[in-house]
Image (tube, rainbow, N blue to C red; front, top):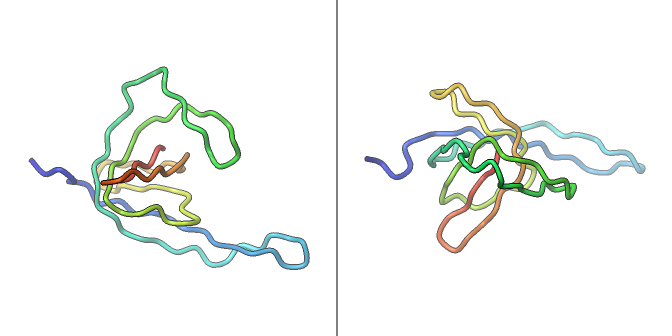
Length: 98
């Protein structure tokens, strides 16, 4: 059994303020390896970048460091395409909540 059997694509959107208005730059992608687990805890809530509490549908465990501007996680082999709620870094790994 592989510990990290899934390949995921992270969609990254960058942008900047120009004359007080947000301008999106070209979005890019990054491939990461990890493990996708559907959430089995109905009581868990995770805060997004706006401070809202959201119940995640799943978790993606990876050794990849959090990527600034990451907005979407896609795993083609599982048919998953979900917005990223948050990406938490721990000592040995990180967890992406979707």
